[in-house]
Amino acid sequence: MSSPATVIPMPHGEPVPVPAPAPAPAAASGWRQLVADWSADRQAFHVSWGKAMMWIFLLSDTFVFGSFLTGYMTVRGSTTVAWPNPSQVFALHIGGSDVPLILIAIMTFVLITSSGTMAMAVNFAYRRDRVNAAALMLVTAGFGEMFVGMQAFEWSKLIMEGVRPWGNPMGAAQFGSAFFMITGFHGLHVTIGVIYLIWVAVRLLRGRYERSGNYQIVEIAGLYWHFVDLVWVFIFAFFYLW
Amino acid sequence: MAAHGTAQQHPIGLYLKVWALLFVLSALSYMVDYFHFQGLLRWSLIVVLMLLKAGLIVAVFMHMAWERMALICAILVPPVALLVLVGMMASEAGYTFLSRLLFFR
Image (cartoon, rainbow over all chains, first blue to last red; front, side, top):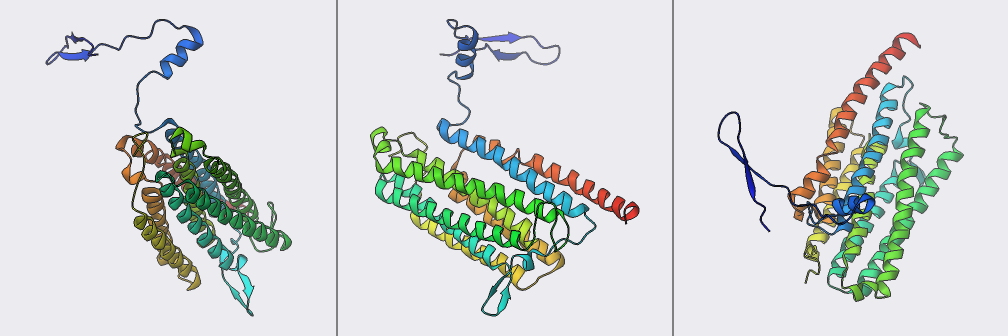
């Protein structure tokens, strides 16, 4: 339906045609009116609502992790005590010598591998190959669980070495709080991701999405999982390598 | 067939290539630490490798490269506010650091 254009005379220059506002639905009032207005048939993002909402959630999560990393930058930049050298703190004693940062490197490779299997799962889901898609999602969840396991090992090791949120024997006291806060929150995201992936994979195997004919949930779950990998890229660079 | 018009269907070879590239980039950033690069070289290498990895993950794995401009802008522009925060907090950290050096040592 084309709405009639009214012409508003401007003080200077040519008159500008202004489209009349679309007629508002009249029937509802109160809360129903609010819902009708906000859910009216106007669309800015031409993607499904699930995908748009996942992206908006991930944007908000970007701000959470961005603020954590900024806070870490601030305490690290403002302390007069030497910052513990992550290369040595996270070294493992393997075969008679200390290999710097090796556990973190392995964790990085595990997470990237899981991102690869997730991308393949999305691909299989859109081919409606639900068995392979679900299998790859479960493999992804397995890699995620492996990552969380190694993180638990890393936490235990540091706690046994005396690292606490309020101090540590290696240097600046803020190291512990930044470490536990940032990696803890990331580990929580991985854990939730593992549960989410298993949940979607089970529904996939049961044929729930085959019946509805819509496999996009796999891509949406994939968005979350890739985001967890993305955050790790930044944590790896700024916390462990810097 | 795309049931909802926005299905992201891309050749599996592309994912495998990006996957391999991410492995190489991760190995390179680990090498930065392993070979003890220091100073400006270390920091620039870390940031460049990080941005390459992040860009590949967002563009290919998260399909951002094939989304419409409206969605790309809605997601990628707001984080610029974080860069402003980083700038402000960096100067704040420098100020606190100098105050501590002057008055608390």
